[in-house]
Length: 366
Image 1 (cartoon, helix red, strand yellow):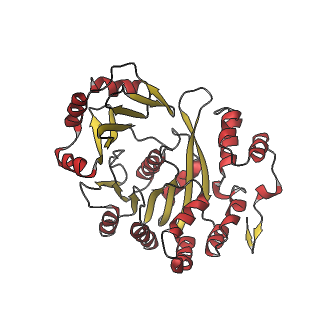
Image 2 (tube, one colour):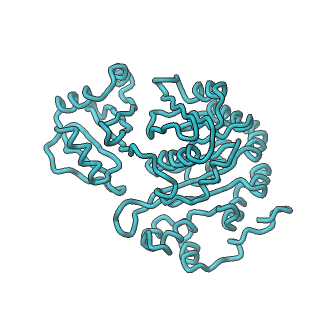
Image 3 (tube, one colour):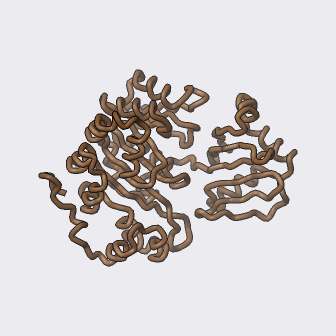
């Protein structure tokens, strides 16, 4: 198997992932679809030779002990890869996520311009959430790139592994990899607080300790960016609360009401021309009315405010409808992902319902 040719082929066909497994031909994921390659099955010796060519020696023992390992790899000046090597029924399997060497911009990714406002936040926590493969890393890279181009700041990232490589522009940027430069996300976050940061990116908030430290960092004058595997803004708040005992929920809601700045939840859907996928984004900005709802544990009322569009907020069906109106996705494609089929069709027609205009929530204009 010619590994270099495989990667170059994946780049040529704009594949997002490569799957390599013993006893089968490799697969590409192109525009969200798994595509088999016309090639002989990969043998065990080929797999071992391939693994030896790019797996760092320090990780080989970990692979055998834990039966799986994550790491990053750069192929020449062509592309970076996030790799996962693991055992499946005693056979090795490798999955490579391809990552461009060029930092994408918010405009190039077709993201809401509302994300550019993140660069103006001096403190607080902004989260990008969504299922695996929804483009969270690319979105955060674009946000960091916008910060790097628009303000003078110290940015520290803690990632597992490092994906996009940022160069100093207006900002000075330090990127630390879990396992190589620091033991875990929480240790990296605690250490970052003593490294004169303005912006801290935490690759993922995986446990209560990291979430608690991230909230503390956002309270003490830092902008914290991170991700969670949640599918709505409300679920994101519920997930954060859910990792702590119920006795702490009231104080946590008060902290989130004061320090959560934004939650962006996204998925990717197929473009109408078949060339790539478009990001569908639900955007919640923590304006005073939403902060009040979080504080009072009235989470289900948040969508009523989001529909009004204040500060660039939107719900999924509104984002889907906008893409359909702009002929970026087919109407039928949007129907597959719409939360409310009738509201989606109404948004496409530009017809507003009374509930779409926000409203008055105990003295706060929606």
